[in-house]
Amino acid sequence: MTIIHSHSNSSSFNLAAEEYLFSERQDDILFLYVNEPSVIIGSNQVIRNEVNLNFCAENNIRVVRRMSGGGAVYHDLGNLNYCFITNKTEGKSLLSADFLLPVVEMLKLLNVPVEIGKRKDLWLQGGFKVSGTASHVSKNRELHHGTLLYDTDLDKLQKSLTVEDKDESLKGIVSVPSVVKNLKNSLQENQESSVFFQLVIEKLLMKYAPCEINSFSEVENEKIRFLQENKYENSAWTYKK
View: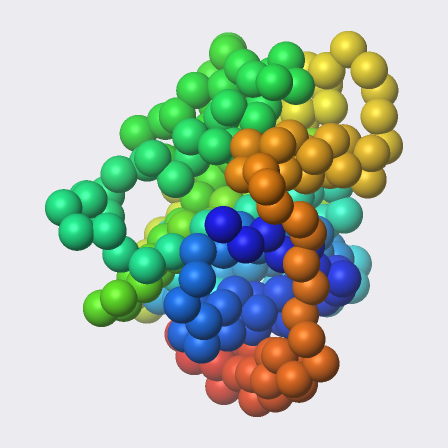
């Protein structure tokens, strides 16, 4: 397993990086990143029905469309994103939630027991969602990525994803709202997000030992930036629905 920790907080860069790793490399990868305040919508969603665009514009919240399906999610500096990209395994169901097992194991090591839900998401006891996931597959590769709410601004999360005037005539994948909670509230120690994220990385390194944190080469950075500028920051892609 190759573990890559992004140097960037740009949501468009990190989504472009996911596509690059999915399409251009053939190794098994765990990609970790933290985004600036952003709403990330699924590839087949109607943006005006999923995102409060006025609130996002007023609060400097980026809106970016990702390559995977599923519903809209909110990212900020209190949320860690994980992305597992692997070659397909013969006989393994693409509907399996097994990709979440390393995350569940890591959280248990940090004394945060979670359960896998029916939508391949993670829940705390009491019915609080702390991680949602989405997937994208091709002939040879599969990608599963998810959020991990630690100290996210839940007020902005709710307001950015609340749309009052929806156009029901427009067809697209509809987000399923859930009651969410920050993991920080379940930990005894009150740690900064960066400290907690470092603990997560250390536990994952132990899981996949011998392993070390990798970064992108300059050539890879150039290819990712090209994809970022020409797709993920292109309004034709973001507002295609």
